[in-house]
Length: 433
Length: 139
Image 1 (cartoon, rainbow over the protein chains, first blue to last red):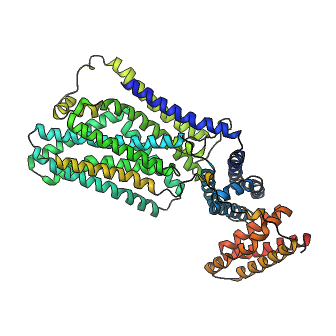
Image 2: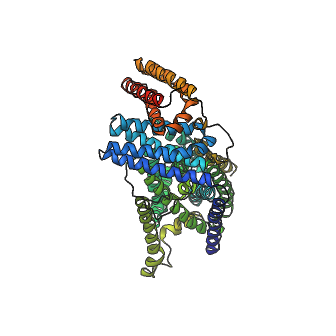
Image 3: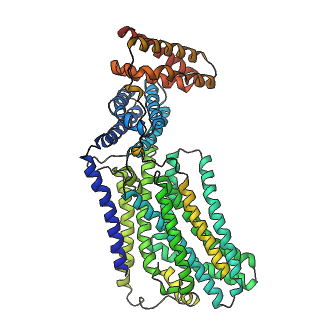
């Protein structure tokens, strides 16, 4: 079952990537040269900007000015006509920013001032590349999938947790307290919505540049994704969380405290809600231009979640939830690798991290590059490679080495899992995820 | 059970809203490659030398006016008029003297900043560049 599921998913991803690559190759020979050339010229202009900033920092102002001027006249000028047709305002802004940088270099402006303009220009160049690039199918498919999985996984975890808590109440003959937990769930849903606006507000007042904020969001998302998905941590953490919630329920029920039960319902769901807000914030930041596909993924995820939630409450463990959660964890890990790549790139754009381009590696179309976090620089490739290696090593340990080292323990169910299974059928699924 | 369903529905709706709201604030949906606007690029508009001379002289005059303003906001406001004189002639200047074209654009950016020191430098440099251009291409 799991193998078939994986095979279908891999096939879908494969078809999506091919569908992106084949038309691009075909188009390059069918008169779409001007757009492709414009993108190449944009990248060349971007390289000259980076070089001129390095020269400025090294105190070679005149050389910096010459390279900046040649980058503008030889490369960006070629982009202006197709770009103006797509977005006249953006063209003008970029043109002015180029001029501002050159003027700063020429008239002795401080390096910090020129640097700030270069960072802004990098952002404008990325925007320009988005304007000139067709979205294709692969990038929308990837962000749709990421959005779908985030929504479904986070939602399903909340649903399973509730199923366990309700089961626990039923098994201890305290079913009358269900409604209090549900009030907490309602409150958590509203608080999750409020968090979307609060995070936006918080970001708007923070004294950092756009790129730094994007990087911070993405890094936070990576940490949380790692925490919730990495097998070694996640399994222990889920158990602790469940035991904690059940202990609190027991205390609240014993004391007859309705407020405590509302709070339990709230915390158990809001945790997932806040994680979702953070993930969507990161996904939306780096999926600029693909918002409609992210929204569609969220909608599809919510629809499937609604069906699954109904089935879970009705049929419990008859559903192959374990297979889904295991698969989802792989996608969540891949998403965290993409976020990490984007975070590193954003820090490079903000001139917080240095970058070393790898000329032998190709550039991906910008939407696909953002969706996967791919950037042909040593720093992003190494960071993504390391995180992937940690995930793979964790998987090898959890699924390969550890079961061989502990053969005697394998058939026996942990006591906590047994108790939870008695309390609710979904417990074992959640724990084994 | 009924209440559970309502709250479940509320939860799903909120979860969906989180996704939709988060995605709703994309500044730009991109994909401008498909746009069909056909704005004539100022750089591809060419004017006779007499018009260029007249436009550049007006540009230089306005630059001097801007440099005399002590209030940054006022200077910025006044700099909005620079494009009126520059747009009709920039294509010709660029074709004839790409370096001077580039320099004038830099001076424009100094003037547009509205900062006193920058507008003074911008006006001074622009004056020199315009004079050099007109010496080579008199109207």
